[in-house]
Image (tube, rainbow, N blue to C red; front, side):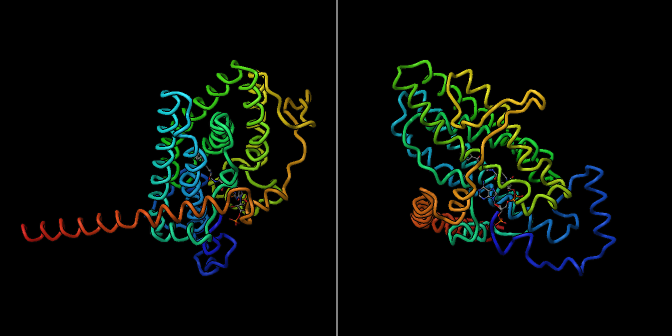
Length: 329
Ligand code: BYC
């Protein structure tokens, strides 16, 4: 998603590129060879990756906010430690992904600027509020669950630095999903009020989690090229279906109901069929008009401004150290 300047639909100088080189590039991809930063790549491939990887990094960084809301109010020391560890992992994922994007010739400052100016976006899911502690369970279970479903195939992405980053990230996401489900289990075995909180969290996060996979395949502008280049291995609808099939039995185990009156198991296909997704809501959130878009960006800009003196001090220190090293040499 999102940086329009980096959008794969932008006119790129592809026509000027050598058709033979394009054919050789596609042959490498078809042979499952990894594309590394020093290998020639079509400009659109580079832009598509910068768009997706930087969106992914921004999502991790903004995604810390809904959970940060509950650090001081986690119910026990153990739950607080888990939440802190999860949020720290997300910061790490963001930094790791920014590094992967940098291998494509874009600077971290440019990527930050694109996020802060609103030119680059981040996953729609992080524009929803976290109203109760049960939301920490729902986010781990559903949001990280959806993220893993999308990210496991990215471990086989054709671009080497992204694929390798995803291997570590997926291991940590798997812990995140388990801790979320563990919260849901505890709440569902708790008091009636705790069960009701768990059901309410599921009710609010179910549909936004399905939207994380992106628009229906028929409206997915980037899928065709991304599948051809093996950046994406599955379509948006394909991954969404896998997520639903995996998650419905988990909800049944918890004794919770999925907030979809049209949900039904199709014996013929062995898949759970779902009701219509509110794509108008998705479009509103993407356009900046979700419940928390403004708040998320305000906090991010404030954090950037508050951290300016740290970056300046670190840069000044590095300059001094370099000068000292040069004098000593
Ligand atoms: N939200 O052609 P399409 C985490 C945009 S964080 C917003 O299908 P594509 C976590 C899309 O960009 C994990 N926008 O696009 C962190 C495009 O717009 P532009 C986040 C969306 O790229 C903290 C347009 O819609 N995961 O796990 O082929 C706490 C058409 O879409 C969304 C990733 O970032 C959306 N949900 O496919 C807890 C995974 N969906 O650019 C957890 C990496 C679509 O033309 N990204 N759009 O203006 C991907 O796999 C792909 O980018 C997507 C979309 C499947 C998301």
